[in-house]
Image 1 (cartoon, one colour):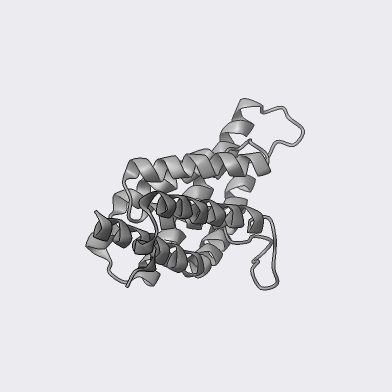
Image 2: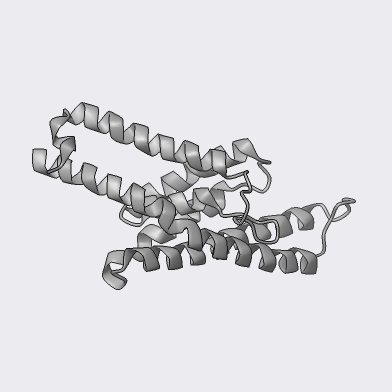
Length: 191
């Protein structure tokens, strides 16, 4: 039986909020680290993108977009705010929720890995567009990059990020999804 039923609804909500916030904090802390074997051409998995996909898969587009905005702002706080990560993660949350995975693909691990792969490519493309627009606005900067440099580098980053993020997605998705299912079941049984 679900041991969460023994908790009051308020305590269960607080515990759920603590687990959810703790998982975001863990993703934020592991994002800048590069463990042996978790890096490809200097690029590591995008843990916040994986979290946004895990959150958005079974939620509304509005909830997915809000999660993307919040995590994007947190990532901008840890890194340079220009280009912003908020746009790409909000788009990832919105698109993931719109996919409505339950209708099309039933296998969780495979579908989440495929969704993360596609969303990583989309997120990196949004970032590349931001770099391109930034360089078009200020063309006489010393550090200005050509469009071909931006797009060549984008291809490398997008592919590496997509591969690594999709490979590591089940490691984050499975425990979070299982937790959220248990909390949802407890809420339904107690209602």
